[in-house]
Image (cartoon, one colour):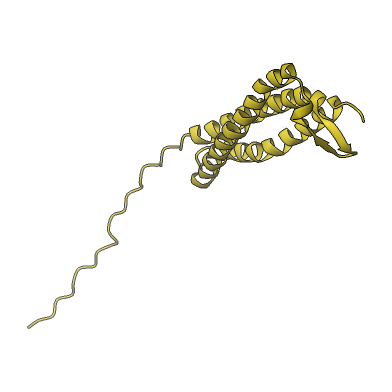
Length: 147
């Protein structure tokens, strides 16, 4: 038996994989669009609700407000009904769409599908409820009758 050396082969032929196509930035842009829409509509709704509800409020202390519906006339109650519906719609739709914008923004950032837009979407969606509450409180305090 004669021993024959095996031929030396080089490493298997590797080929350069085609470059991955750039990921679309649509998801981040959608997140940012929803967040900006919720932000703008929520601030406008908060200002409207605050100015509409302010005249019906009574100051109980320097920083607290209350409304006693037994002291309101039927006309005041009827005028406040659409404002109450808007307030409920703002809470429901603002919450659902704000959470949607947050989730889409997080996914966009994690998967690099519009990372910059996703970061803006996350920041705006997180800031919207805070700023809306501030706008509501300021407009309510500005339009409430002084004791």
